[in-house]
Length: 138
Ligand code: DQA
Image (cartoon, rainbow, N blue to C red):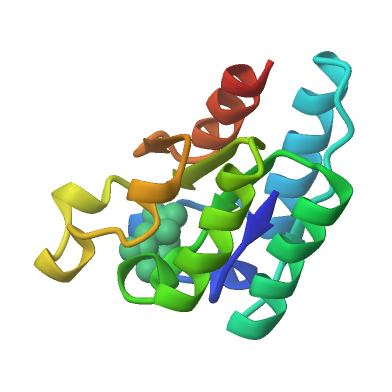
């Protein structure tokens, strides 16, 4: 479960948009939902595009499915898209998730460069977007 920039600020970042749950809350909820499904979730967050790309390479090498919230990188990072394409190209699943519904927000959020190379996208259900992604994986 890979989370991109500014998601470490959940809970204090624009709570009217992103809610009051923190990254720690998200991490413990995801780990509990994964355990219920017999999965082991490795939940990570970085603000650094290169680190996120490295984690996608690692997922390919270790043959792990990925749930990715690319945050703002969603909208413009072709480098992240190329890394995500390697995951699905290796016949692993990559689910793009968003807490909010980007299509109901500013115009610049309406375009995802990740979506076309993802297995699927789940957006708009707050923390439940991650729970639904785990359900999709199992
Ligand atoms: C987000 C939506 C993005 O547009 C935004 O840049 C984020 C969070 C979401 O989870 O709703 O940082 O990915």
